[in-house]
Each structure stands twice: as structure tokens, then as C-alpha cells.
Length: 612
Ligand SMILES: Nc1ncnc2c1ncn2[C@@H]1O[C@H](COP(=O)(O)OP(=O)(O)O)[C@@H](O)[C@H]1O
Ligand SMILES: [Mg+2]
Image (cartoon, rainbow, N blue to C red; front, side, top):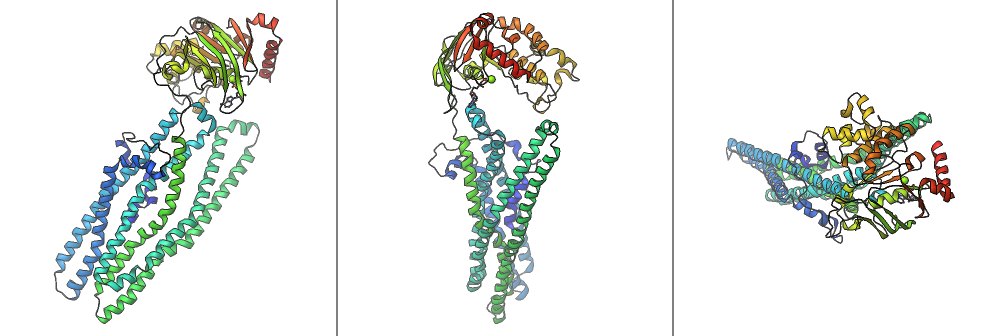
């Protein structure tokens, strides 16, 4: 059966084969999707498909050729039986050889076409995936505030699959349905009335295909959703295992999983039941066609109007036609699904980063590190104003602490300086340059941030520290680790700097992770450094040691420490008190304690929070 080789289900299986060597030749996307949102979805995808037009055209032409040869076989069979076996008017040998040759050609073209189809499908899928991932890397933080990252990735994957499947296999199915026309032509050439009778069941098969897909689709959709639920629960229980166990909720979680699993089972059983009802239709309708052919054809044979071979040939044609006609019916639903998937993909690809380099952006070269916030107003999206009229100047080499209540906007100040977000009004300047005039690369190389919840990759400690400067020597890595007071504990690890950090860095304590994150930033040696609550998870005595190591490093650069511990604030020569979106007081720690009751209040509150 020719179509089975290109059946989407088959393709699904082929995709899950990790040994498929086709991807190795992948070179990256050659085309982008169309940016014109008014086009129908398939026109927008078309450039990506078209960039593989050579392999795709070969695939389709060969598949067509293969089908033509396949349809020749029953015709030859008809001749062989009628002329060689019944009437002995031609040599059996010649016909057998003819059939063999045609069969071999059909097989060979089929094999090659199949390879080209897979090559196209793999490459289209890889293209779409690269396009999406490249785009995701390009998007700004504001996008990630709005979406759930896990969902984004899994959704992108299944949507890519459904678009790929439709765009490469739908044209193929259409071409293969063309076999119907050819086969019908051959049948007409054998016997006109019988050809018409044989084709009677085909429209029914087509509608059964549509109906089946329509009945099966919702349940397969439900199954997918429920499987995703199970995956979420398992994921939460693996990642949140500490919470589950500390609240002794293992049993509740097992029950929750059992419920979800039961819902999957229901969906699977429902699916099997529907399949049981509908598959026999699809399988046995052709037998009805066959019965009709046998009845009317047999009658004609008995009357002497038709050769026996014709009945055999018609039988073969009917079997050959069955699959394309059913697939044709399914094509509509596949198309609807692909459309929905494509639209979700476009949602990502149409998203523009808010923070972009303006034309003519220039590099920030060896800045002295004078930081200036000029009447900065900021809100996240349409949210409330977080900063209003925030003004501050930090001189080169100065260390300044920003102190404020939780949620007062301290981290936001740091994000504006690195241009993770753009100010709503006012300006942030480094050495007098508006950060929006600078290239993002040079800006972010000049401003280093250590966050309070540092993310470490599942790679070695050395590679984590050298993340921003992969070419750093081992000596530099060790020096950075020493400055962050991390060298000592790293040396005690079984594999030292080669120790691979566990998933999410779980094998390290919070304080250790933070010290590695500090080392990572120090290695880049940025002229401007922001420590955003970076030492809050480290015990006070370790912190003191870090501070001692940091002291000489800080002297050489402009540093903003966001902190609430007096020990950390002591690093700074000046403290800015942030409240109500602006700097309400500024001075040394002692001066502020004396002059600003709010300052003492914030520190007291922060201390109680930490003790909780
Ligand atoms: N990505 C975001 N999207 C929307 N609102 C945010 C976002 N990040 C922070 N906020 C809000 O902005 C305010 C200031 O946050 P932040 O700068 O993190 O405060 P701080 O670091 O002083 O605790 C908070 O009210 C917080 O809820
Ligand atoms: Mg913060």
C-alpha cells in the first residue's frame, strides 16, 4: 500500500528515532516567516518551505513517479492473465519480467522519495524550531514576565510538529490522491461501466475519513491535555520534593497523581472505543466495493464481455485507492489543527522586543563609571508607577547603598541601569551617555549584576564562573573565586572546579551559589557593579570575609549595593533611601540614622523579616 509509507503516524515514529542521521546535515534556517500579518497562515510559513523547494520537489515528483509505476502493475496483471494465461496470445515470460521491472522501479523511486520527504520534513521542523528559539533569545524581559516558560517550550514543540506535518505531508497526500485519477483512467480503459461501479464507495470512504477525524480529534486533544497535567504534577513533585516532604504531603500528592492518571486512562479507553467503532468501516468499505466489482464484473465475465484479469486488476486498484481517499478526508482537520498551531507560533514570532538598539547605537568604551539617574519615571507595562522622579548621581569609583522597603523598586533601579527595561520617562546615563544610545552588548559588558537568586547552569563550577568570559584562564577563574570567597569551599569539593552543578544548583547551598554568582560577575570585571541583595543568603561571618575580599575590588569601580544588613551597608560611603519611587534621603549611615526616622524603620523591619 503506497500511502502507508508516508502516513503521518509513521512519520511520528520516524521522528522519535534518535538515530535518524538526517539532522546531521542541518545548517540552520535559510528563510524567515513572512512578517506580513494579513497573509493567511500557510502563506506566512511558505518561505520556510520554499527554502527547501529542491528536496521537496524531488520528493513529490519521485513519489508521483512511484505511484504511476505502482498503478501500472494491476494493468499489466490484467493483460498477463487475459492474454498469456487465458488466451495464450502472448508470452508469460515477457509480462512477468515487465511486472518485475515496473515493480522494482516503483520500489526504488519510493525509497528515494521517502528519504527526500523525511529530509524536507526534518529540515522544516528544525528551521521552525531555530526560528522560535532565536526569537526567544532576542525578546526582552517584559515578554518573559507575561508567559510561562515551561509551557512556552512544550507548546512550541508540539505546534512545530503539527505545522511541519501538515505543510510537508498535505501536498504529498494531494499528490498521492492523484493516484485516484490515474487508477480511474486505467480502470476506464479496461471497462467503463465497471470502473464507475468500483468508484461508488470512494466518496463514502472520503466522508468516513472526515467523520472519523471529527469524532477522534476531540478525544485525542483531551488525551494530550491530560497527559500534560500528569507531566506537570510529576514535574512539581520532583522540583518541589522538599516542600512536599517537609509538609508530609506525599500521600496527597500520590492521590493527586493517581486522579490525573485515571483521567488519562479514561481518555485512552474512550479513544480505543471510538477507534473500535470506526476502524472497521474504514477497513471494510473497500470490501463492499470489491463485492460490487465481483458481482457486476463476474456477471460481465460470464457473459463474455470482460476478462478475468480485469477483476483482479480492479481489486488491486480498490486497495490502492483506499488510503488516499481516507487521508483526503483527514486533511481538513489536519489543516485546522496546523492553522491553530501556526497562529500560536506566530504569536511568539510576531512579538517584538521592547528593548532594542536604536540605529546608530555606539559602543561604551572604557567608561569611568559615572552613573546618573535623571528624573526617572518607570512602570512595568501598564502597571502603576514604580519609580517617579528618581534622581541620583553616583561618581566613578563610589560605592553607594540603596535601602528601601520590600517592593519599593530597588531591583527595578538595577534593571534600568542594565537596560533590561527602558525608562518610561527621564533617562539613565553612564558617563553622560544615555543607555538607550549604547549598544546592548557594550552596556551589559560594562554593568555587572549579581542577583539575590542566582541561576547556575548544570555545567562545571569552572564553566559557571567563566560563563561571561569562556576564554578566561584557570588562574583568572581561581582569582575571581577567591575574591568572592568561594575558592575555599570549591577546593573541598570532590572534583574541585570540575564539579558539575546539579540541576538548578541544588547540590550547593544558597550561600555557595551566591558566591559562585559573585565570582562569575567579578571575572568579567565590569566598571559598574550592582549587588542586588547578593549576600543576603550568606551567613554574616562568611559575608564579612566576602566583604574583606571585595573591599579592594570595589575601590576600583562604581558599585551599587542593594542591601538591608548593616554589615553590607557599611561597604558603602553613602546610602540612598528609596521610598515612594524616589530618593527621599541620602547620606552616610550614621547621618541617616540621626536624621531620618524612616531609615531606621526600614532597617528594623528588614531585620525582623530576616529573622522570621
Ligand atoms: N516584572 C515585573 N512586572 C510587573 N511588576 C513588577 C515586576 N517586577 C517587579 N514588579 C513590581 O514592582 C515593584 C518593585 O519591585 P522591585 O524593584 O523588585 O522591588 P524591591 O527590589 O525593592 O523589593 C513591586 O511592587 C513589584 O511587584
Ligand atoms: Mg529586589
